[in-house]
Amino acid sequence: MWEKIDYGHLMHSAMRSLIRKVLTEVSKEGLPGEHHFFITFDTLHPDVEFADWLSDRYPTEMTIVMQHWFDNLDVGETGFAVTLNFGDSPEPLYIPYDAIKTFVDPSVEFGLRFESQDEDEDSPIEIVEDEAPMSEDVKEEHKDADVVSLDKFRK
Image (cartoon, rainbow, N blue to C red; front, side, top):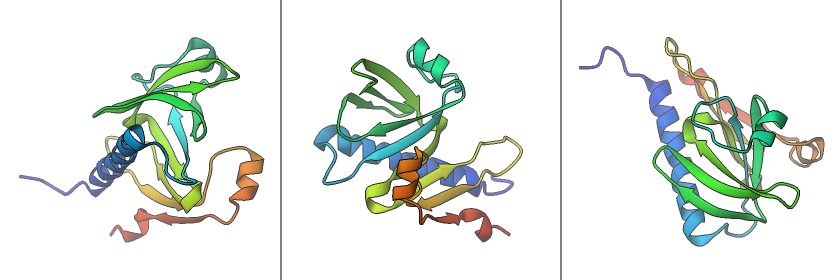
């Protein structure tokens, strides 16, 4: 029997399941239309796997773009693997869903932001419209972001 319903954990799980489902479809069918993803993740997560030179360059977090060129997208239960091009050098990465901080598809003004999870607190999740954690050029292109925080629905 539950002592309390952990809505924060349930929302995180549901939203990460949504990401897994989207990536599974992309692995089978490719990206439809103008869809593309900006995925920011915690590079310090113990299960993240990527080249040492990338780890040196991005010691705490990294944002990847899945748009024109990506390969070997393999979607699993706890994370996904993908090969991306870094300056004409293909590099494999493994990103656990728990390491994801933001998942944004600016083509349809959709995004999710996961706050860090503390074991003693419910962790908020925000549904972000049109907010891309990228360069100033990208931020300028998507500057009118609306953020909806699920915290306002808590009692």
